[in-house]
Length: 198
Image (cartoon, rainbow, N blue to C red; front, side):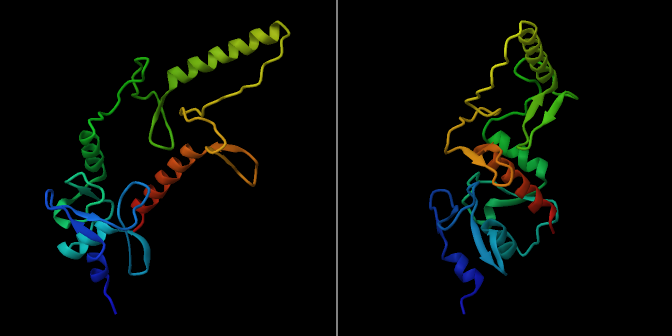
């Protein structure tokens, strides 16, 4: 019977230039390898590689960082155990994406932000100002006896086009959701759940 390590070693190719072990099989939605072993259908291949070849178990709450910045790499020598904060910091540095401290209108996010499901931020001051403008407009229309026109939004609040292909309709309620936002929220919840499990 073929062992997990024998199956694993059939699923990557070594890049001579970088030394990366590039995964050639299935990937998850974030581009990381997927490998089935010990009854786990969707285990990350780089986690298996690190624990098998290094002989170490990844401590609870810690992450594995790809030093090579190649998500498909499963070379245990290119992997390092780091804290979630350090992993996040490194990923931002690698794409030159600094943390935002102020909204586009210049308001500080300190004690002034709603956190969105996909870890984004919404400025409370700007949201309050937009709400005040909308309420004033509705009040003015009512005072003039005009009917309030229905809102015909072409994009979701995060800017994704509201097309037929990008609209998810809940069977239970009939409500509509942006598919991109829904999938992003599901991914965030999945990773949070995986990070909290043993």
